[in-house]
Length: 106
Ligand code: 2BA
Image 1 (cartoon, protein in one colour):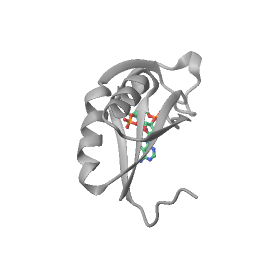
Image 2 (tube, helix red, strand yellow):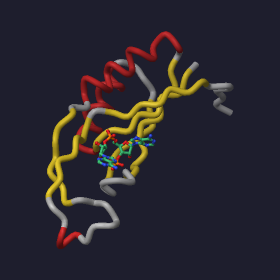
Image 3 (spheres, helix red, strand yellow):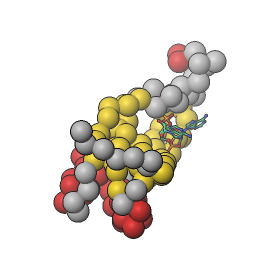
Image 4 (spheres, protein in one colour):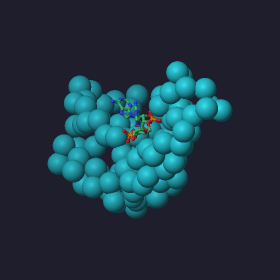
């Protein structure tokens, strides 16, 4: 069994959760915050059998679009009043796949 941690943009979270649910995956959604943009994103915890890892990742990928967003430079070294607009790619998903040693419901 594997544990998938998938960080997606908040705008895509409901599409991702619906797609996972429709396909029979159990998932937990956490409200998280990215360290760079400091805006909300969503992290999904999904326990899956090894053979279904690629299917789950494909569902996430198909429902989390990449797009370019213009933001003020969020770097702590730049005062926001002086910061130039910056193009940042958001969306898509950042995915980690971990081995699960034990899976228990006690
Ligand atoms: P954030 O840290 O808010 O980053 C949002 C997006 O900003 C990133 O998208 C990337 O396109 C851009 N970005 C991040 N750091 C940057 C920098 N120093 N300079 C210029 N642009 C930068 P993603 O890479 O797709 O990441 C989306 C979210 O996934 C991140 O939100 C963070 O919450 C998480 N994440 C990404 N890589 C991670 C990692 N190695 N470990 C843990 N979480 C990660």
